[in-house]
Length: 83
Length: 350
Image (spheres, rainbow over the protein chains, first blue to last red):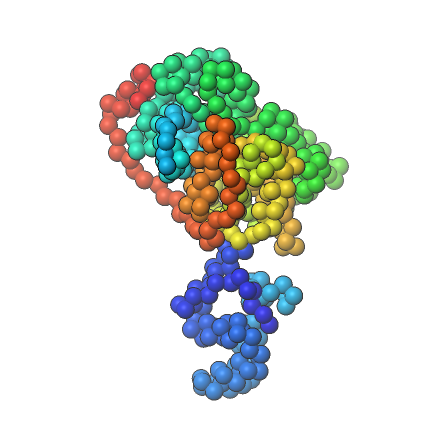
């Protein structure tokens, strides 16, 4: 999944989409995930990083991860060909 | 470098919940590094705040409403010109643009310059003429019908030309979304009582409202264009907060429209971006909007450029602006002295 290139993501978790003017606030975990997505990490790689770092099992994380990426798609924050 | 001082007459000095563009235009002119400006305010009411905002308006004259007759307005401008030697006049209300377009030649003979659309440009972009305008210039517009009675709306529905919800609009201002025939009749009566006839019935296009402020030089060239999305909208549909967008599609759209119409002067495009990413033109306002200062702050001083065009200078088109620049409007209780109110009320000057 490719995050829209034009998205501005600050270190504090503020996301600005310059094409629509919409802005969002991410919690620290979401920020970490979106940064990994921006660095072109695959879902498997992200699962590995997060389950290693936090006390969460793979299947629980995957559930939340796909819920989160579904939300990103719905909010049109992914590159068009990825919709 | 500022080499000259221009006397610029400006109307639209109301700055209430439906603000006029006068003060924002003046803010742009005050920030010009090309010329100094002496601002002559043209006020219609004693309680417009502009006349009391002395940091923006140097001198104010009351003027009669255009509806009171063109000649009385002209006589008043002649008087003001004899006192102030106006170089450029910028009308800022939709309802007075038509009159000033008609007066432009006479004003020029007196030495007063304007930079307004032609009568043809003004007429063809009317809300009631929008479908023909869209067809001519190859742009998507919602179906619109001018009506002079509520029963005509019901007939349009019966003939399956429109369906609810639809938008009921005044010829100059105001718009309401009607979900059924009762609401349509109520809004028709409300708008026709306030703004007269015809009332425009428009297809409701679902999507996000986006706007562009732009300036055309009259030859088809776009001098500047800044797209914005309203972030906070009042119950009158006015932007109380907005943000500039990185949307090359909207810029391209604006440039094509200006090139096709050879638009002369300032304009505000009201557009709807649908979920399929298509742009529908809802309205063209034939003047700079009240949020024009956002464009100035984003790097395009369109009021300054408009004055330069009016005075015959060549203006290099702007090709960039700051993305993500925001405005947040606020209201402010200005304290005024009774003697100033008294002076404007009795002498018509301040």
